[in-house]
Image (tube, rainbow, N blue to C red; front, side):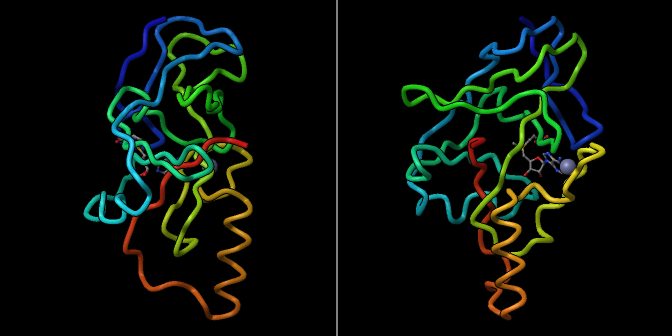
Length: 162
Ligand SMILES: C[S@@+](CC[C@H](N)C(=O)[O-])C[C@H]1O[C@@H](n2cnc3c(N)ncnc32)[C@H](O)[C@@H]1O
Ligand SMILES: [Zn+2]
């Protein structure tokens, strides 16, 4: 299996396969330093992007440094993430053809404003945001109650797919 990083129509750089990938294949591991959530608060403050991935029930966060960190979000993805024995894998949810961009649903959580993670995946069923449905509901509820948090002080970690 060959993976390459190149320009993406979804966002900046993306991760593509040069060879066919079969459904169920563990494509690439999400690697990088593992941090406590409280130690990630200022990371990526000055960036429009985040490379953080919550794992172990959100008790630990991976600061993505490898190829997997270039996999963009889609609301109609061809991969999902799976936590196996302390490792996070990006796994194909269908057969993927050469030249396709790899994507998974970030299901972002721990947000501050529904508008701060717009989605440009282009899928017919795009939900318009990279937040997970439960987080969308929570942020809408907070906004209705006038309890939205102060402007973003931190970027949202990713979350593994349910
Ligand atoms: C882990 S990085 C992915 C790699 C990124 N494209 C790059 O070139 O560095 C995650 C960031 O990419 C951007 N991104 C990924 N998928 C996106 C999407 N569907 N719509 C909008 N931005 C997206 C967001 O800024 C997000 O915080
Ligand atoms: Zn989308």
